[in-house]
Amino acid sequence: MRAFTYERAKSPREAAAAVAADPTARFIAGGTNLLDLMKLEIETPARLVDVNDLKLDEITPTKDGGLRIGALVRNTDLAADKRVRKDYGVLSRALLAGASGQLRNKATTAGNLLQRTRCPYFYDTNMPCNKRTPGAGCAAIGGFTRSLAVLGASEACIATHPSDMAVALRVLDAAVETVTPDGTERSIPIAEFHRLPGQTPHVETALARGELITAVTLPKPIGGVHAYRKVRDRASYAFALVSVASVIHKDGGGRIALGGVAHKPWRVEAAESSLPRGAKAVSEGLLAGARTTTQNAFKLTLAERAIGAAVTEARG
Amino acid sequence: MAILEDLQLSRREVMATGAAVGVAAAPGAAGAAPVEPGPSLMKVSFTVNGQRQTLELDTRTTLLDALREHLKLTGSKKGCDHGQCGACTVIVDGRRINSCLSLAVMHEGDEVTTIEGLGSPEKLHPLQAAFVRHDGYQCGYCTPGQICSAKAVLDEIKAGVPSHVTADLNAKVQFSEDELRERMSGNICRCGAYSNIVAAVAEVAGGPILGKGA
Image (cartoon, chains in turn yellow, red):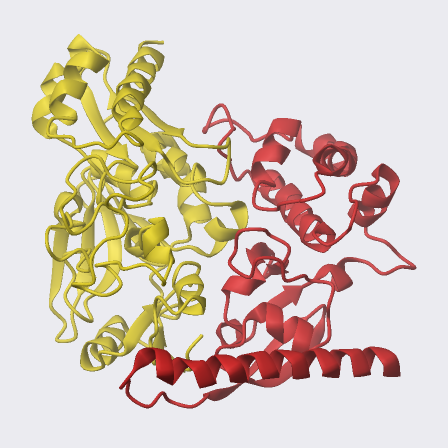
């Protein structure tokens, strides 16, 4: 690990200003992903700005009947919150399907959104990776691709986003609240928060340098049967090969988002009108444009079947 | 004690040598990289097993290295050092965490409990005694992490924290073998002593925890 200075920010604006002014600075909250990457020298900040004192660790009701989740709410606390369990079950389920108990106790809401890919070539510093070194090339393309993207990928990057939580937030139409050094606040719809790789896979989110996430907001509850079905190589503590976040209503309509298949949670709203006609019908639109390799083509079949299981389960 | 002291010093020397080689190799690999900043030292105070500790540490020091290398509490183990194996699990302010994935300087004022704080050879914690009774280990390397994790798991179930295998999110969480196996999945045992670990923890849970909970 490279040497760095460490400081604790006193306010969100102060934290944002510190990181905006110094290209070598990074925010740190739970640290479970950042420190891992710093040990491997994939991340090499010279300055860490600790945001844990910013009092962004509460879950409060919003005026329009939703919830405002502070950026520092730990994954364990968010999953266990009674309001989330009752009205946003897909979010609790997604969180509980991710990581281990130890990691969920540390990992924060904002940090979960900002975690980096688990592409094995991103982790192997002997391999070229456009995320680590823009322009270096992508060793994953033509390599071992079983776990990698089948939707929305580019010639520059076929990595997937590893978050389970983000997939649930996508079906719930959450928004990400931020603050910039000059105090400007904005709300970014979750659909626009994570980017597809295109030619700049190192630019992963819509955040500007130094822009700090302060909260994630959930609209008022939409009812329906909530589920998060995660398919992985072992029963617990593994990243998704494919995951399905679903909210399905009595009339068979609802919402579906996929994890483990793209650089961001994958949802195609236009395809959801086909949901009452079953998994095959909705998958046609949802998986349109997929590009697979012989190693990861199974993800399309797996996604359709996982959606089928979610639909069947919702019918009771 | 003197022998242990020598042993630890020599291990640190070995580690320091390893680090020096790493630093020497870096400029060559990076070409004309800018000069790296030197180590940054900081003071931090926290409580470990009821005792107040103040250390001056390189900011890079993890909580695990602070415990093992600076406070000589070598019960907590370094397995993968990347949060994947759980051997470093300790309890901070009542919650289990991977101490290898947390900077020591981020624990100002915190209360840390390690395996040394749960029990002693003379007065074992009920989980420690159960692990002995049920042979919940072979080589024993993961055991301190398993026991710290298990202690926190029982507290989590008591506090009503749900898990991936909890059938109904809105019902009271009950102890079961499935719950235990899911919640302990962040603690790997390469010897594969899982069935005996489950038996040991279930025995402790079956007493006061189930009695009070249900």
